[in-house]
Length: 81
Image 1 (tube, one colour):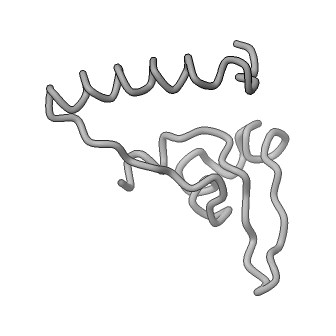
Image 2 (cartoon, helix red, strand yellow):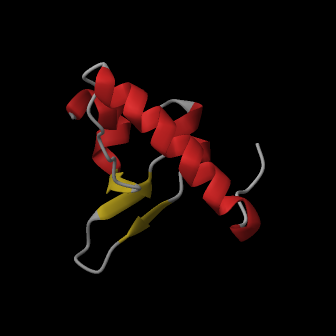
């Protein structure tokens, strides 16, 4: 997949709108997932000893001292929703 640059933005908006109309017609509703989650969500759901948790996640401590991770995949977030 390529990045969507400004020249292609209008076309992609039209495609997304058409897809959204189909989803709406069949009763699907949109969910929006956070880009960052508490690290424990992924450690608990994926497993603390997996390669994803140990090698592939970008984790940092936020200003309040919580361990936060950029979402490596969306399964845990979708299941929670």
